[in-house]
Length: 115
Ligand SMILES: [Zn+2]
Image 1 (cartoon, protein in one colour):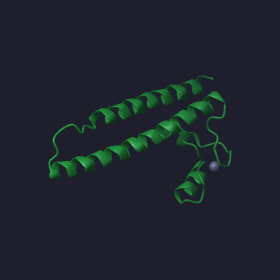
Image 2 (tube, protein in one colour; image 1 turned 45 degrees about the vertical axis):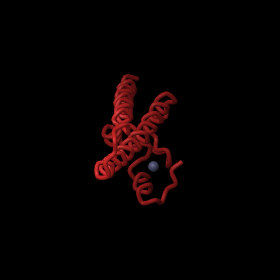
Image 3 (cartoon, protein in one colour; image 1 turned 30 degrees about the vertical axis):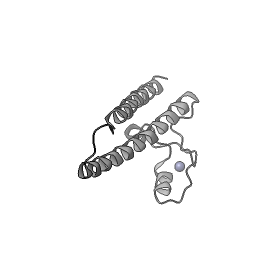
Image 4 (spheres, protein in one colour; image 1 turned 135 degrees about the vertical axis):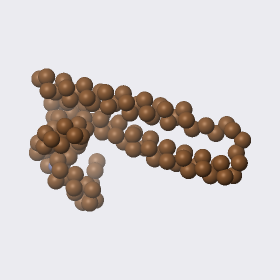
């Protein structure tokens, strides 16, 4: 099915991009210079921001990987909670979506336990 190939391509591209970003973050953390207190505070701050960014990216990478597995298992596009088909428009916008809109809302309200 060529449509699935497109999805797979998109996910793989996204995956490469995230891996590149995560690598970049590792390189930019540099503790070797002599610290000055103000500088250090700023640096710690940006380090925390960077860690938060890479945490987001790691999480997204996991979602992308999961989506690729679902493509492989022929389960792509199925909500991981209610098992209904996820809206194609939603999938076009977020190819690694795990949940349909209804279930995503429940997740965001903390009403659904994510695995
Ligand atoms: Zn659902």
